[in-house]
Amino acid sequence: MVQILRNKNLATKFQIMVEIAANQPNVQQRDVARRLDISSQAVSEYIKELARDGWLISDGRSRYRVTNVGMNWVLKSYRDLRDYCAMVGQAITNITVCTAIAAHDLSQGQVVGLEMKEGLLYATSDTTRKARGVAVAAARKGEDVGVSNIEGIVDLVMGKITVLKTPGIQQGGSSRVDLTALKQEVTSRTGLLGAIGIEAIVALRRIGVEPDYKYGVAEAAVEAARSGLPFVIVCSDDDAPHLLSRIREANLDYQLLDLRE
Image (cartoon, rainbow, N blue to C red; front, side):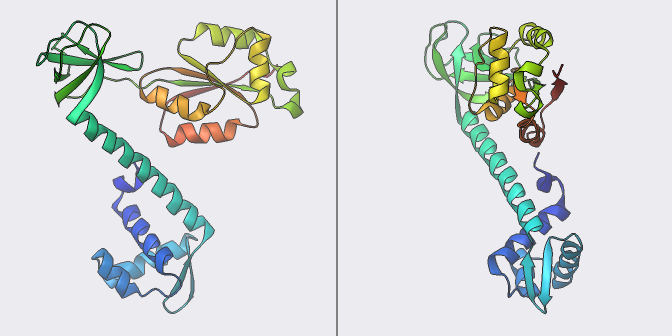
């Protein structure tokens, strides 16, 4: 869940920051209070807190500016809200009519159970599933089928992301990778495989393995994990901070292993 949706204090601060950013530098507290339907005293206290936190600067009476630190927080919160709203929109669409793969031959109007397998949604004749719906049309096994009147929640365990970190080129690159450990980790795990960085790709090729993904790996891993699939990423040391930040931002479970010799 997005942080500012769990915390009323942060939600109000976010709204005040947006108001100030849109109208700076001449911002009247009473105007902000009126637009947010809260008291001027409350706005004043929030502004004091925001200034103490370094998110706002006051240039005098009724003159406020959002700092770079404050703007970065607003942008991050906005992106979190945008992603959450996209997920809500998708969920609403899915509730209306979702697409699944027919696990068996299905007839139009048949009540079906819904389950996730290998990251894909299946419609099955097993109606004891927690999520159920009605097949919009007849479909043969393996065909796509629309499902409406959905009730319940599909059982889904989030996938785990494993990050195998390799040295950057300044630390020796692929020549400093423990290839035995790399091969063991890659071959012993199920799921998809991605590589970030030339060092990571070369290390995989040295053990005779080509990754499934070389571009957009972080987002692919997040989407796969959200669909219940495990994902292994071989990543150069230089690219690891950005990758780990994205995984943490998505609140996903991960394991980090250093494969440096």
